[in-house]
Image (tube, rainbow over all chains, first blue to last red; front, side, top):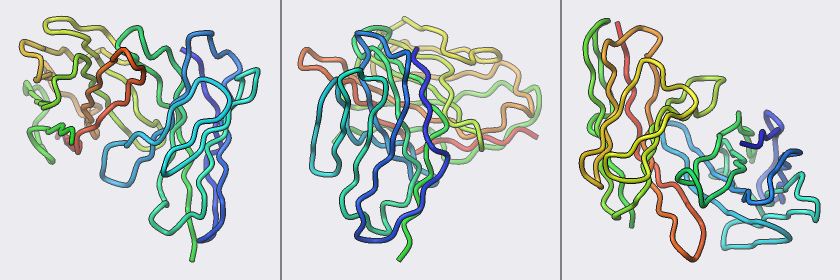
Length: 112
Length: 115
């Protein structure tokens, strides 16, 4: 499984756009990139998934360059409730039950 | 909405006891997972299952076993609990369908303390 590297922590202020970058230099051809969010005392929650270029949903965007060795999760106009740990996962979603490895995550703190 | 439930939110056991953690999902998902989460170590995969009676080791299976007799239920078993198994245990399920995507849905977690 491809190993991922993320910043340990980030700070932001309400209303700002936040970009969290994940490095995955040994990503394989069949691997997808998935991001999860986790609040204290809860299980992680799926945010977004992509293979290449750009994916956007109602809560976030995911930017993946052509070489796919990194990806950036973009959260527009964050609020205090976006304070959480964000995990980047890389793995083949069609084999081995789509298992992936959760890294250490990035703790995002949004300040008023 | 997908619902993944775990039998207990908090559990206290003694060293050497046999411990059962139960997980049930209601969305007919093929895949189920057990993780443990410890401060500074993120989530680590213990075991997963892609079908009834099928199981695969994750990254840290030592000291654990699992059982999946029915599609909706995945049990984690600590044969002889030890203090280093004190942790938050999270269950998840997912479905890999033809349209792609394997979003994992997580339960609320069980905080196990082994004394």
